[in-house]
Length: 304
Image 1 (cartoon, rainbow, N blue to C red):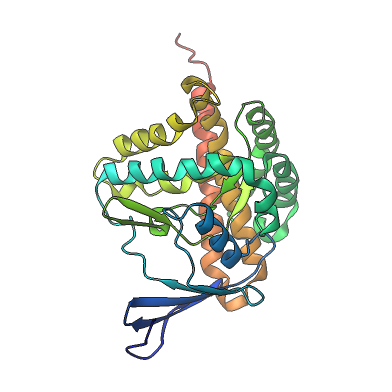
Image 2 (cartoon, helix red, strand yellow):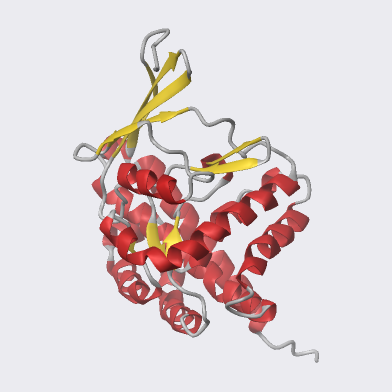
């Protein structure tokens, strides 16, 4: 029932995906094929399965070609990014967490459809890899490399401590930011699942909070959104324990992004690497900043 009204156009083409668009009698339709890297998900299968489970939250592909990782998607409205309404951002998080909570019971299927294993127990090996990886260390400033080496053992300790909290591994989007959330008429759709994985649920919060600088009051927005997310896990841990868990998870969530960018960087052609090199560097800096701030907060005040 979709009849094209014009030519197929190149909507986007970059190192990790190509997207085409055509206007039809039923609105715009998008074709997407994503690159494959060691930690990438099989996005067409993931979206098709998640749309079956959560039809109000995941846009169902019109069709997929599983072997070639192709899919067709309808246009599902404007992104949350650019919307200054903090209530809408909070509502989006409140719509998202039930997916994570439900998916706790569906891990076997998530493995089957191609979600990567990025649970807390995998992080120590990744820390060791990054600290020994000449390419990673060459992409950041020497002083940043030195600090990363120093903070490495601490990151392993944080992962061990976080695992003591009663928060289960589950579905993680991996790139959950307002540009990957469609918001229309009070409904929220979550898309772009190339980084889908099984991990600690809190890994998804940092990429939303990272864009609160676009809202009128960043401090208020950060506190409000953090509470909107954490308060939905209180049947696993009380609120004060959830706040503690987020403190442990925040630098690990930045580490999660560093690992993602390093994996993507490793498979790209030379001419397309720089954008992801910048992303890797950014998240290393973010990780070091969070670790430094937390260290300062833990340090006793000599004037007391």
